[in-house]
Length: 239
Ligand SMILES: [Zn+2]
Ligand SMILES: [Zn+2]
Image (cartoon, rainbow, N blue to C red; front, top):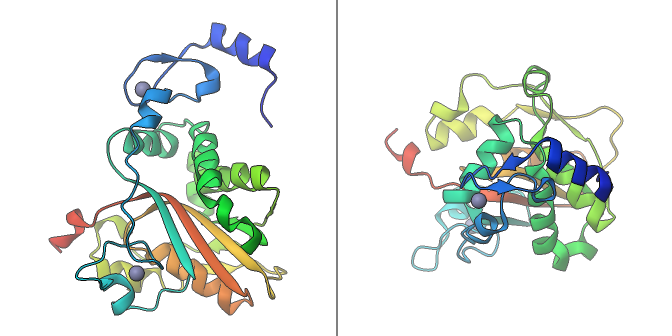
């Protein structure tokens, strides 16, 4: 729930904030990123109609090489510049208010699919990671989006943890390593439901794909997925 204007005004006086990207001072209502920096978020180029990857000679190397479970995936912005600063501030800087902006942006882009979605969910994190960070940024984003869209938010997946650090792995190893990482929570009924899955950054797509697979196996009729960012794989190419 958003604080009333009077409280926001008081917070601005007591705790003046800075934009997480350019450092300029901002109001509380800007959630620690200024509108100039938000306007600099680089919108992703249209690509594969299913996964959004860049097409090469009209072909999608991502969908061609593996089964992609979501019926459609949407990544809003390239993981660079001000957007990368905002994602990092949300994930590592304790700035959970950024999730509201991301939720609003996701809502704006997904509005056209609203009637095709019954439930909103998010990529979970391990209990250990949750206790360390104090919040799950994908849950905060999904919560904002679900509230705006007036669609139920469901906590349906658990993260059982990785076998090794995903960040340092090659593309194929990441995919393999993600299998078996998530499970459906007990008592969750997805039968015949169309679920929208929210994550922060799409890199190899392994996380989104595995979560979608588990939900489809659990009876979901269809899974849509969306992330605020898409990250290039350049860093991983050397492995
Ligand atoms: Zn700024
Ligand atoms: Zn594709």
